[in-house]
Every structure is written in structure tokens, then in C-alpha cells.
Image 1 (spheres, one colour):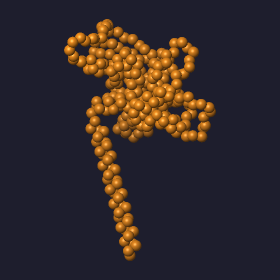
Image 2 (cartoon, helix red, strand yellow; image 1 turned 90 degrees about the vertical axis):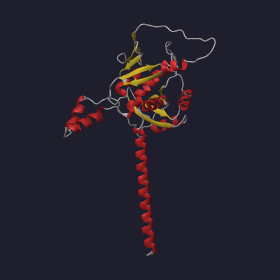
Image 3 (cartoon, rainbow, N blue to C red; image 1 turned 120 degrees about the horizontal axis):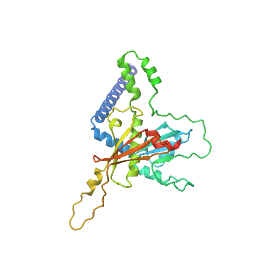
Image 4 (cartoon, rainbow, N blue to C red; image 1 turned 135 degrees about the vertical axis):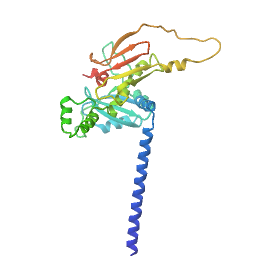
Length: 294
């Protein structure tokens, strides 16, 4: 009888513990969801920009051991998240927990020996992984995150399997909407361009705008960017007494020019300088960054 009571009591305590744990987990999930939903649009964009500043884009061999890859990168700091995608070969976007990890990784990165006299040894966050020796095929295959929109035939097939217009609209939205990985890649492109522009405007920020950030974007859409120079003027307004120096500025007429990323002539970044401020539009995120890999 005592044994039976002991078992029942233990079962009751276990059930109570599980119920309490479940309630606590649900509460924590709701709190986290509420905190995420309570963030302002600007806060979300700044968070994504910070994540991009802590990220690198690495061109990888076709067959790569994901565990060894992450173990190697972890020597330089904690890896928050990563994903692979396929565009002119395997590529990885890796986000570290701090910018110090990026500095450590760049310190151990070699500049390739090239014979072409026009090559410029720019230490960017666009890296290539060199895997010495032959690679074993015993390890699990990496999973690529799709970054391109499905074909018309694929979309037609998906929609034909739905029973109502509501289901078709839901399916179309889920199939074409920007994924978290694609949004991260777009912010990373802005961050990489900022590294170049920062040589001339140290306090500048390149921000995405339009469909890339307002939830109306779809896979394959352009990336609209703006060169934000407000930070330069904010740090320049220093009041003092006595003598002071100012930078010489040249006012130029409105003009358009192109500069190319990679080796694909079709995908370029167009920068327009107008009285309303500099802006730029980049087509084809993956091919713009990795066009030289073809």
C-alpha cells in the first residue's frame, strides 16, 4: 500500500513538474515572440545591419565537411549562425558573435600570390576556402538554402495542387517571399559595399530600402540601397574657439556611373548622384557578389 502510494505520489510530482515546465516554456516563447513583435522597424533594421557587420561570405569547395569547416572558424570566435547556398559553386554566410572574431579571422587569412599586375590586395570579408588534399565523401552532404525564385512551371504545378484561391495565395506567398537567409545576404552585400565606401566616408552607412525591407520583396528582386552620410555631418559639427580647419568640398553636377562587382557585365551596381542624396540599386545579389566565380 505504501509502495503504491509512493509510486502515485511520484507520478503526480512528475506530472506536475512536466506541466510546470510546459507552462514556463510557453510563457518564455510568448515573451520572446512579444519582444520580437514589439521592436520598431528601425530597431529591426539596425539589428540586421549589426549581424551583417559580424558576417563573412566564403566561397567553398564543392564537397565540404561542414563540421571541420565550423570547427576551423570556431577557433576565431563563437559562430552564431551560418548557411550555405549555391551560386557559381558552394558559398557560406557565417555570422560571428563579435567583430573581434572577424578581425582574428582576417589576421589568419592569406593574400593569394597572383602574377597579374592589376590585382589589388584588398582585405575584404569576401573569402575563399582552400581545402588541402583530397576530400572524403563519407561526411554528410551540406544542405543549400535556395536563393532563387522557382520557375513558372514549378509555380503552376504548386498552384494546381491547391483546392481554393485562398490556398493558392498562401502558397504563392510562402514560395516567393524573401527568406531570412536571403534578407541576411542582402544586408551583407550592403555591409561589404560599405567597407569599400568607408575608405572615403568613414562614418557612412549603406542601407537597403524598398522591397528588401518592407516585406513586399520576393526572391530575385533587386536590392535598392542608399548611401547614408548623416553620420559624417553629425561628427563634424564640433564647436570650439579659435582657429579651425574644414575639408575642401567640390560640388558636382548630377551624374550616373557604374562600377562592376565580379566579372559578369550583366549585373552591375548603378549609383546615381542627385540633389536628394546618393542612392544605388544592385541587381542579382548572388551574381553581383560572386560574378567572378563563373
